[in-house]
Image (cartoon, rainbow over all chains, first blue to last red; front, side, top):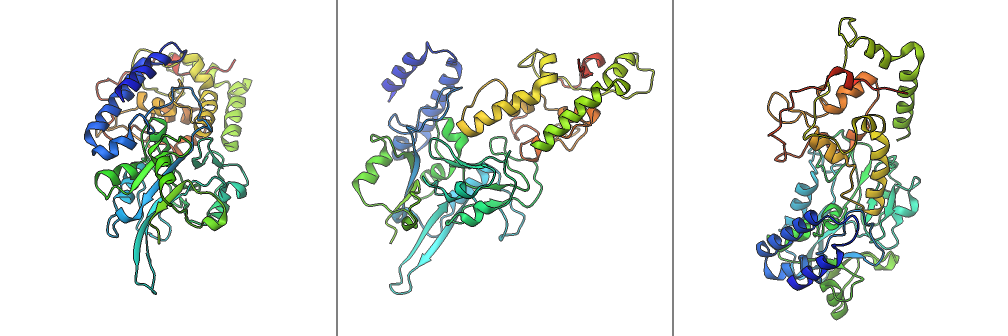
Length: 264
Length: 155
């Protein structure tokens, strides 16, 4: 991995707009993350074949990448809530004691088959569809899909009509009812707008992985894997090619970027 | 956004109106004896801003709006004009030694926007002070800019 990083540095150093200070900072962060995470997490979290390399400042996202997740339910415990806690902490989702309307970007769903008695638990968040219905119905263009497949809400143009909430079959979006203050600087959110999982876009743009994936690897069962579905060399691509995975409500033809394994 | 634009335009019209020439009035009252209250604008960190004061004063909203769309839609980050960096650099310490939010009249943005009667919509969603634990503490913010520099000039 070190060899790869050095080669990359050498190649880009002459480009205009390149900031060696920022680059070396990101490299240091990656190295630090590498030693603090478990070996398995390191491989697909910040390894050379994973989503480690941040884009340079001033470079737009590319359609050559499609970020996705793979969640192995055999490693997802029913009582574990680490992904949800990490999301709340990372994005500053303070509740108001009103579960019906409090913002929820990721939640644990427990399913039970009464015929067989089989119980399973799975985290459900915005599935970052390739054909997102929330984008289709948005009257202002606020709901949009980035070139790299991450579905977001541009709150500068969101008028809070909540069509997208009705259109989403995964119930992934929340509406902010209350006036907010002291939001996280990297996760702006405000009254009268709709919001949902951003796949921690601020982390991804910096070469990291979503907070839920990191927390699952560190404190949970290590069930979540984040990576580039279009890169055949990435860990997630290798895994989805080697065994059967499922998308929730695949019959709708939305092609979600979040896939599940062992969903029965 | 539209409201924001209208309010900015209205403010510009008001400021440029000959009979309401706030800029001229402020210039005339530089001696401070006319009773017209002037904004006290706290100084930011470091020696200079990302652009000259005159440019920032007149164009900060345009610079921010242009870059916000690039960041939001295309994921372009780390460029020169960032609201987050404005907030970090221009944080004003309150009595409890933590930066004040936009709820306080001492907030950097408010000090001037109140004076010009222009609403700020940014902080309905964006954080108006640096994240806890990221407070710049080694800079003396008590020094205010000279009054003449606190006047918005519309040419």
